[in-house]
Length: 189
Image (tube, rainbow, N blue to C red; front, side):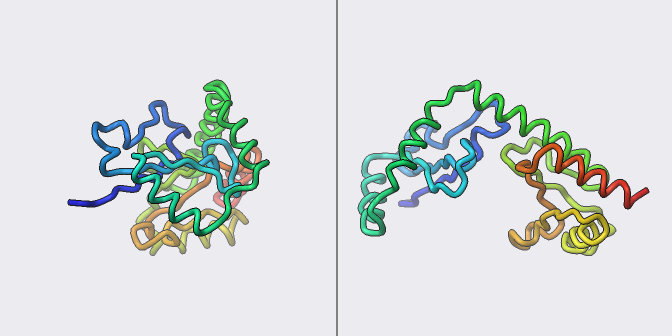
């Protein structure tokens, strides 16, 4: 049907035992390109470093367009990205252990506010359905913010499909997550 699939896959290595690529599907290069970012997988947020994979023809089309937009990336950033890409599986395993510990704490936090997390989530965020007693995610988020001084992202800011959900980041430290749980539990006691 002459459709190009652009697969943005930045969380493929985060809390995911079996990272997958759309390009692993036979003949996918004929109809798809895939983006991945070092922002998430290597904690290089803001550096604007990523990779684009696909057929030579598709990559050439992107390069023709991109070369008219800018003159390339700052060399020290490219060199740092090269070093980051040389990190082995051990580095990712340690990073994922840290995220897994944080996810356990986030699950405890969600339990404290009676939210139901979606199963089998990968990536740096945990999404959860809010209790039916709340009008929407904003009401719950505001209640926690003003009652406990803890901000939890209302899912509605990402679109109408998120209005019955909240999103919690795994980027906060264990200490901050424990502090948030303590504040929430103190108000509920």
